[in-house]
Image (cartoon, rainbow, N blue to C red; front, side):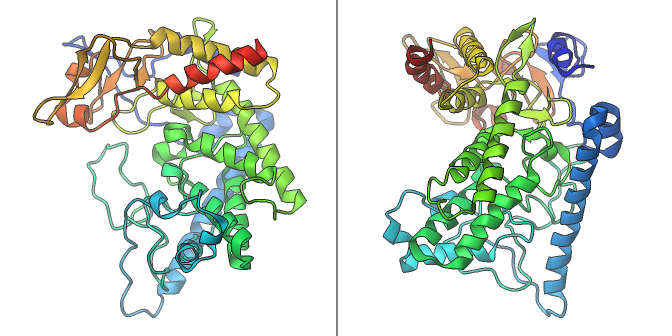
Length: 431
């Protein structure tokens, strides 16, 4: 089926498993479709199958090489070093310090740590502080890789024991390390920082899907991590990095010309797939999903409570990114206008999502003058808010979400308002 026809059929495709009517439950979330040779041969256009199969082979080869490298280091060790500590990794890698700070002892300590924890593939793990001591022989490349035990059927259960997020763009991982090392090299001319930054950029080029997007984790680790990931602005951040580095901005002036051209081409491919992935409902462009099946560009699920849907926060961030493009095409202009119109249509005024006095719960309450806010997710058929539970049940009201998820997840936000504000200036310029 032609991709446009696939998107136009959103109103009839069963993204969620129907269930018998009971209370406000409207469905059950379904697992992310795997990226396999069988699905590639069944769904990818004939002319693209070779590229997809090669991508899958390269991922499997790199995964094996990464694991072999760690095993080789551990051979002969009497004690395996403890996993790295977890924490707020981004906080330890500031990108706005004066140039001299990156050449200071404090800045170089961070840069040295970053270099030491770079995976053989060239990426980094997430939620890992870098203001600590460098990695030692045999230590895991990324934090949080002790054996995880999650119930069978949990969409977030690890698919490879003791090997999760070994190279990821989640929570700005790899993106931040690559940018930091570029700034560190500019300040110090230490070739280790230059080489580490270039290796990070090549890692991201290798991880890019044939269609132009990026998975959350590469080499692929299975599950929804293999999807084209807009969640938490992951793919937007990578595309922006490709553009900055390709133009020699943000400290990347040292890059060779051939690499810069590859990076600029990668950003253009990302921009193209952003436009293709804009969800069409009833023949009209709307917003974007947070997660896609990379083969079909159809919205897909992530964690148990994250269903195929339109995502307001990611759509707002993407619209701001698109509005910063210097020479928007007619198609890009149409995508921006439609996205803004959908945000206006789905905004919620006069309400707030607030903690109860005991802070054990959160509720959507009437609050005159408040807003606008947006639901995190909107149904693909009705464009009405939709919510999920850890048990995978889907609901049309936040009141039917269990308290733990209700208070522990950002079901509503004001973030998309930044896109509405940016649109005022963009519209005045482009009409």
